[in-house]
Amino acid sequence: MTDTISRPAPVGAEPLFNPRDLDFIRDPYPAYHRLRRHADLQWDAAGKYWLATNYDACANILKDKRFGRRYEAMIEMMYGRDMMGETAFRQMRATMLMSEPPDHTRLRGLVTKAFSAARVERLRPRVRALVAELLDRLEPRGSMDVIRDFAHVLPVVVICDMLGIPEDDRWLFIDTATITTRMLDPVPMNRLELDEANAMFDEQGSYFTDLFERRRRSPGDDLITALLEGGDEGGLTQDEMLANVWLLFAAGHETTRNLIGNGLLALHRHPDELRRLRADPGLIPGAVNELLRYDSPVQYVGRTAYEDVTLDGVTICKGQLVLCLVGAGNRDPGMFADPDRLDIGRPDVRPLSFGGGIHFCLGAQLTRIEGQETLAGLIDRLPGLHLHDVDSPSWQPNFAIRGLRELKGSW
Ligand code: HEM
Image 1: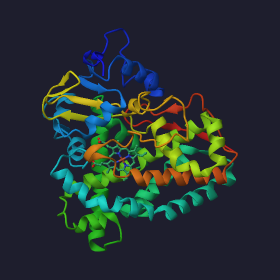
Image 2: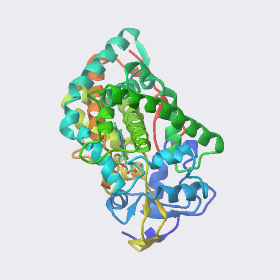
Image 3: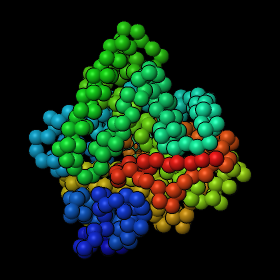
Image 4: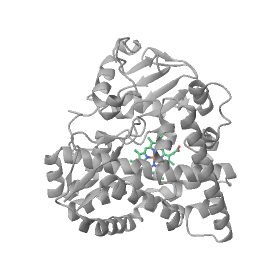
């Protein structure tokens, strides 16, 4: 690496990285290229965090044991002292996503089996049937909002099936997605947003407390029952139960929805690639990895240094936060030839979209199956699908979780 790595981000009228900027949110990739050209690792004085901008820097930090979670420290840095009493932060802290070993090992250990490649492969026929069922309902209509009518529905049903959330209750929390995604942005929420997040956790907390009681009385063949029963790894506290069932529910659908939405948009913006996929559905598994790379539903993963760490001449001090910009790493020309080109036949694509190290996405294989079955179903059943607004679609105003508000289409 060059010595440019030790440079701070350039000072100028326009910061290179501004996660609040709607133009950046609409299309972050030109800014990522500028950042990467500047340095692989750079200090962002405005955000008070480091930015890792290329593939290797992100991948190495994610698996480096000198980095991890310091959720309380991150909240203190973003919001000031004494904020951990807020319901939203307390609940988030109890998730495996925000915890550290040994808690993380115990929490993750309880659910790992349910998400193993072999177990989720057994869900494929169910996912395929759900795709067919949805398309049976939508096809005669001649039009849909891909996000609302399809991309949101499929993953909600799949994760609710796994958790054992009754059919009538699955849409109770449909409007909370924007609050969850807002919480993950590296931009502090204002008081109103924080109150909304607290209310969401309170409301879902009462719902799940009640559901846990019902499952204790009449156990089912589902993940919530399995978690309540504990297993070899030891049980969960009530707070841990609430936080982690919420995490599985939220993580299980909000990101997959955006894989489907961002992926379909990318394919329809590249009609040659879409034609290529239609002509050879054998390309579908590789295409899903390429779509994850091309426009990742998760754009950054945060890590805090446990000690002073010097990487290629730059010292990240103990307690400092690094944003691993996985969306930028996925477009690193040092890793992917012609990275801004969508190429569904690209060999052996390993996107950074699922993170890395001990927090590597638990649902990676499940989401791939949902993506693959969606593409197969749409190619087969809606060959004439035409998406409106492919040139200026409406994006959610968030940076961390990248997805569309709506994506209308007709056939
Ligand atoms: C963790 C991305 C789908 C459950 C993560 C992380 C990323 C990610 C980047 C690591 C975060 C970090 O290290 O800070 C994605 C993407 C998805 C997706 C891009 C879809 C396109 C799913 C699904 C589930 C899921 C379907 C299923 C329930 C989780 C869980 C964690 C996680 C539980 C925390 C793991 C841990 O902390 O050990 N995901 N995810 N994800 N994901 Fe996913």
